[in-house]
Image (cartoon, rainbow, N blue to C red):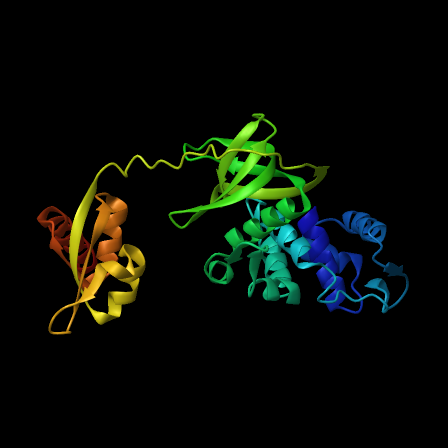
Length: 308
């Protein structure tokens, strides 16, 4: 129902008048249901009118405009997160998300981040590449700021789906993945939830206080068992990326100045292999030979795939 209400509101704002039949056709519902939605919008203090006769229909009063500030940034992020959770998602819901995403407060949110007096999380780049994740992050940040419980739907890594009420305590960034450390009312314990695995967030009225607590999360990755020391020959094009990965102190210009030598300890796993392959010809693995051979095999397989 919520997506139909939003769609109907947008349609009425974009048109002087629409008949119940026209709205019913657009929303793929019955005219009787359209009138129920009129009552619902009126109950939300939106001046929706029905005018009989020739040229009549359903309209919104001239004194009502949905300005860019009608919803706050936090309200818009919560609405978008809720709409994004509707599955399967119809074209109508996608259209509503697109229209709401164009509202000024959402666009301005895409240029900002979450901050307090001690830490700043600049999520502008995250929003550009993954606006859904950013919307969920902002909704959870709002909940923590206002000390309000949220209801989430969570998909864990083994495919189990659960709905639970949680109270956010802190945010954790690990290996470029965001987590929320929250008290789970279902389990009566602190839990760590990967934000990308949350499919919907509903802000509740229940308030809470954050007591003194200890870090109890475990982000152990079973693939991170063994480390190896690698030596890379790096071009200028990849220099800064390698510095951010291995540390600027571990990347030094060669004597002739034409390339750089980088050294560092990394996990001998698939994640490291994918990163090395991603550098392409701008970072050559010199040592160890075992890692060099793995990269060569991965590149050969990729080349055969695209040439085949």
